Image (cartoon, rainbow, N blue to C red; front, side, top):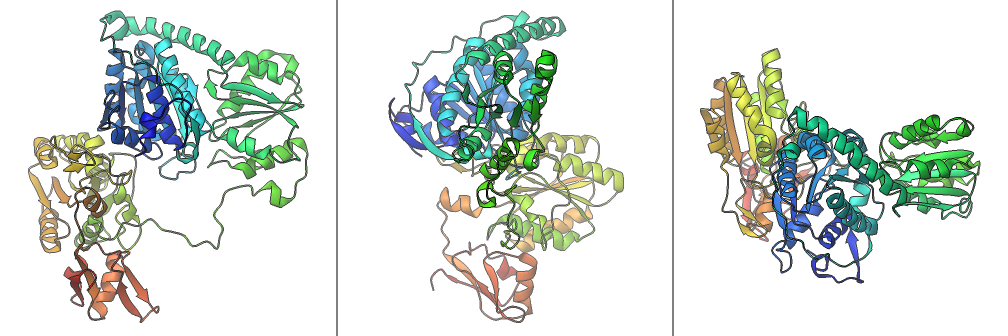
Length: 627
């Protein structure tokens, strides 16, 4: 991990990932506490804090991977109540999990300062929806910052933390995938002198929101929002530039696309731009002044038409002066509520409102659609992944008639044939609860798959509920000893992290038994005979039963446990058994050369040495790697 993020001096410039820039900004603000639940596209923020935490100079803040987002915000909330400057990070759907404490924190306030990073994911690059968390700023009453460059990511989180401490109110830093993962030059500033947290100051009439207190605190929140609105009117993050009768209001990464589009000579100098870096509360006075001499206004924002609708409402409230203003947003030149924007679509929208004709090559395509002739890369589990062996065995025993309730994690990649082990998915930790519902309503055999990190996150309550309500469900906990999909972050059950052995493991089987489940087995899914026997026993039983499929992710095992691949599989004799192995296991180390009737080959470089295929096909043997 780049140590300059931690040790770099003011005035230095470094090339940083947007997420790394957020880390630097928090360090410059004097951060005390960082909590998180990892989730793409936010994961590099906590991962960087984690990697730097053991370095010299990185021990002056506390960092934790919390078991879920609600817990992360509650730990962070407690820390800021004790006077600690706090950053809590998660992806957009994680804010749904954390919404309960978030709403209350907005009422009681955050004495030490607290910024919530919500990393939104337009385009669903790694998520189950495209929700726009600017709505949470409105719902909870949170001032909202939206950076568009790596430099702004660093500077905005710094200012947001300092303002949060000044206002004693939580602040939302809303990013998107494109901002989190871009790289840009970042000029470093001075690191603030650390202020020791003042400690918790008892004040029940503020911090214990029984109804009588909450009613008063709601009024205080509205006063704080009014104060934040005054800041929005004066902050340099909201800036106006350019000339013309056509205006553009842009927020978030759309500001970067707009800047690129305005480099075109046919568009440069023809529009007046209002960039909203602090996008909530709106700077209404400045917006009205900005719009007063415009004929047309284009609103550029990814996601929902939040700014567009608020500006329309602002114009309506202001009276007749703006009756002739033509406001355009979603629907202009194909601008949509779905997916991401890009320079091309923004350029097309500008040409439409300006009435400028550009060559198609310059105007850009209306969307970022994948060309039809480009080969598609289906979701696939890695070679040697224990989830593959788990799904193969479960499908062999339970077949097509069972219902497979899936969850959030690597194991969702078992959706496609021949594994076909994901029939439905609701949200993080839902597989046990939702599977119980299917089983109760239909009487169908139901298997719920859930990962180790997801089980700790929010699966335990579903298991308790299943036991209490006497549901009939088989729960398969696919325990690969890490939080694999988001980057191998530690969870309460890991053996080892990048900082060494974990001495505070929480045993999944002990939890399961503690929840009241009597029928529990822990088996390595790579040992097919034992795993199949366990599945047969579970199939013959009823009620709540749990099979823990425990084997480390091979990538994690190599990188952190030092496990080496010494033996690999190879095809010793072609035959139907080998072809059936390829077709039913679908390991990516296998390939069929020459089409139908050709030879099956195993790529030695991809083979992880799991040896599941040897247990399926006599024609496959093992050898030393490189032999």
